[in-house]
Length: 155
Image (tube, rainbow, N blue to C red; front, side, top):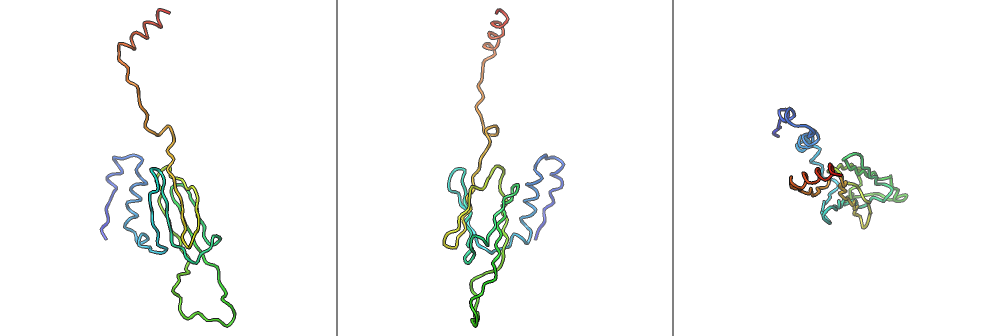
């Protein structure tokens, strides 16, 4: 795998450290994890949904944690007793523990999670603070400003 060195960019950029770390992590073997399968969809202009196939897991066996810009979903099955004398001949339904991490963009928050028909749905929403939203700046002519100064001086 080819590795890209971002160190020359660190000298000429400020505040993009997290971006370079994320780009470095794309080539790591951790990104090859395929269990459990998931979908990410946009459900609105500022709304997203992560759907994960977690068949066989109950609500109390799944933990969801959002810390800084990382969403972590963990699943750990409890030991199940099928009954005395029963023997499992073939296991086709995965019951292994998992931990899946998602990098969230700035100002993306978890709104809630639901488990339905073996699918875990995590709803996300981007809430941009008012001070960071674009705002319209009124343009005034220099002659208007001069008149305002003259009016204040005359008063």
